[in-house]
Image 1 (cartoon, rainbow, N blue to C red):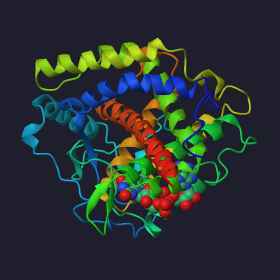
Image 2: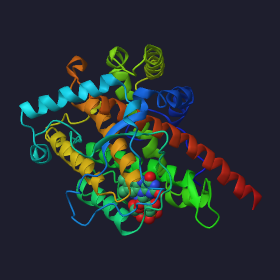
Image 3: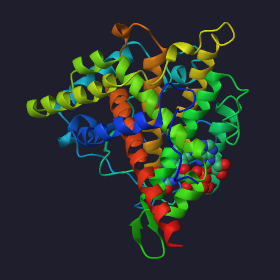
Length: 374
Ligand code: FAD
């Protein structure tokens, strides 16, 4: 049963379910506050980019449930606007073009970033939460299939726990599956009953998409363990970062909250040992393939035909890509450079996992209660 037996070691990492849950209890209120601050709530993103893989993938779901309004520019701190202008000048001096970014096989990044263009705008994350939009059917299936079958080392979505697959490919698959499970958890929790028009958790949705698949739940926990290790690795960097909110009081608040997050990451034993990855002669070359596949997944998110789903898909894949960049791009943290969009996606992506774990707990209790009443 999906509501029992989540204890002990999480496979492929150094962490137990119980530790994730304890950490999450401490972090939940902190992250909840953090994602409401000016710095973390406004995300700059292009949601109108063309799908680079199939031409007929325009936004299909355009109802109120799916659309994402732009933020009134007066809410954006002036410092961010100045920062953007200097970036435009810099990129035109070096003549960067989108073709260059999209086709670059040797890039060291895990993600492809949106560039300064007409479509790039600020959106407000807390007022556009990830939830049921009605996006499903061929378009959604095509996106998930393309991610698993073409960009997951050919590991189909029902074979991810295959022990014959090498550690790196297996964990890569699990991260994607955990992201998928986290999205499904939100969809089932913030569910709209189309008949009654009432929003609320849908236990059957949870059981059929997540509850009956303990490995999918485990993959969410694994994602959490990896994020915590990434936070732990760059805790000094995060504590010294300038979080400009446009007012001193909020700057102070963000610094205090970030300090609490990094303190929790230090209070527990290491959750994940990244040094075990990509270090044998057979797997050394796998890192660039992994980055290439991951960059492709970031591009596939532009094929999601529902604006709100695209927003959260892009944000969460960028957050995960940032965690992987922190763990696998360099041993020397002082050489690391993260853009505002990466930090915002990283913290919001982590908050999504944190809330999904809490939702799973609620769903398990609801499920248990329903079975007891039968
Ligand atoms: P899907 O979730 O579409 O899954 C397809 C197949 O993948 C399943 O049949 C199963 O075999 C396999 N599978 C499912 N889960 C996992 C897993 N965790 N690990 C491994 N394999 C798995 N809908 C919304 O209402 N709101 C959103 O915000 C939203 N965001 C989305 C973001 C993205 C990037 C995408 C691609 C889709 C999004 N959707 C969203 C649609 C949603 O994810 C589902 O596709 C839709 O609800 C239909 O679900 P389904 O039950 O048919 O299976």
